[in-house]
Each structure stands twice: as C-alpha cells, then as structure tokens.
Length: 358
Image (cartoon, rainbow, N blue to C red; front, side):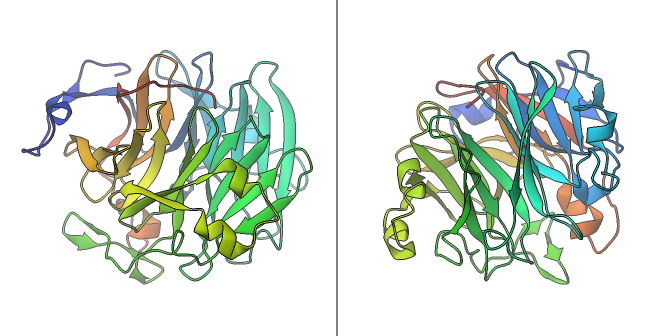
C-alpha cells in the first residue's frame, strides 16, 4: 500500500528517544521492481533507479502519487541502449538538483564509457551528457553514487572500483573535465572488517565483501562534501572549494579532508541543513545519523529494513530511504536470489532542515 499507515516497531532498546518512534512504509514493490537509489525534484516528483544487481530490464522509473511506477524518462531511455541510440546501461546513483535536472550515473560496461546523463524534468528533454573515460576512470571502475553541486557547477562521484584503486571523481560541468582524486587514500580504502548480515559474512566475487568509496552527499549550502568507504567506521568531509582546486597535490588535498564522525558499515547517505548526516546501517537493519559533534546513533531499526540503501530529501521535510535486501541478491549471495519480498521506500521526519534539489 502506498503511503500506508503500516509502521514498523523497533527491535533495539537503549537507543535515543527518536529511535522509539515509528518509521512509515511509504511504498512497497514486487520483485520485478527492486529499488536502488532515490531522487526527489523540488516539485516533489520522485524518481528511483532499479537496482542492477537483480538484472531487471528497466533502469529508471518515476514513482507516481498513487504508488505505481512508469519508465523514466521514457521507455527508450529507461531500457538498455541499442547501438548509439537512447538508453541507459546501468544506473545506481541519481540526484535531482534545484533546477529540476535529474542526474543519472550510468556506469561503464563492455563497449560503453561511464557517463552522467542529465534530464530536464520540467521540459522532459535531454539536458546534457558527460562522459567519464580514462584516466578519470579505470578498467576496474564501478561508478556508484554522486553528489551534485550547482553552486560551483560540479558533480562529485564515488568510484568503488576495488580496495586498491577506489577514489573520488570530480567533474567540472562547465568544461566537461573529469579528475580522479584521493585514489587509494585513507579516506576511500575499505577497512579490514567483515560485513556480517543475518549471521553470515557477505561475499563479493568469492571473497568477503570489503567495499571502498560509496556513500557521498553534499550539504544544502554546497560547502562540504561528505563521503566514506562503505566498509569503514568513519565519515569524512572536504570543502567543495578544495575538491575543485586542481592546483592542490594529492597530499595537499588529503591534508584538507576531515574526519566528521563515526558511522557503521553503510550504503547511502544524505545530510540536512543542520549537519546531520543520515546513514543506512546495512548490518543492523537500521537507519542512523552522524551528528555534528561526531557521534553516531541509530534512529530506526526493524526486521523489514533489510539492506537500507539510498536516501533522498523531500520538500515535505521527510527523509526517504529505499529497502532492497541486496545481501540476498545473486551478486552478493553466490549467484542465488534469496530475497523475501522486502522491497520498499520508507520515510521519517528530518531532524534538521531538509532541502530537496541541491
């Protein structure tokens, strides 16, 4: 049921008063529509990537007010391309900016360079395409998520790649130039910690999954970019002006990265106007927050929050999060689909000022 009154009781005890509240199930989906990430335009329209780990045909859908979905931007663009025609190979990260441009991170694949596709949701026309080729990307690149900075006309991308080459990519939208930064740094390389969910160590490619740079977000003022390895115990931040300063050496840029606070093993993140960085805690079936004082706490936790993934801020003051059981997907479960039908979007009130459309 869409916008149902079905809510989820929390399992944990001894948490903050916020954690004893209820989280609302906003929309549910069948196995044909496993959610990836979310984007919400300033006018409230909601867009969702269909997670490519499940091998579905559609890449992007619009979530309609009645809970139904439709291919977005249209049937041709939401499916795999034929030759050099319209289409998307595989999208995880997407963001809607303050001008209503939906930015879709279309990952590289055999015969395709990674790229960012911008679609104008107001005029329903193609806005721009930026290609992300070498040396900004590598043959091992896995373009995962992005943060859009319209103040400086830039996009910041996490390249999960592998543990040795994970990095950030900085795209200048004025020139189209893309630069690879902080590769194999202490702020992008995963920690040596097993990802344990439901009592099992999650594997990727035959080895315990230890994943590099993934969650990334930008504050409403476009001053700070927050990012981290997925498998890490800390969230970091760096000024946008430092990321954009190509005169800085790698060592000089690294020296300007700050440890913002604690975090769990996580997938998505977003930040409100008060500096609360919301985190999906995938090993705890939970959503938490890293506050400006550096402390982390769980906000909501429940059985049916199996792998909370991507966030989006809505103009209604709510934070929306996708649930997709990714640890039960074939990619992370030895080739078998063991999902139990827990595909949904949940939402909760933001702790501080929420701004959609960065």
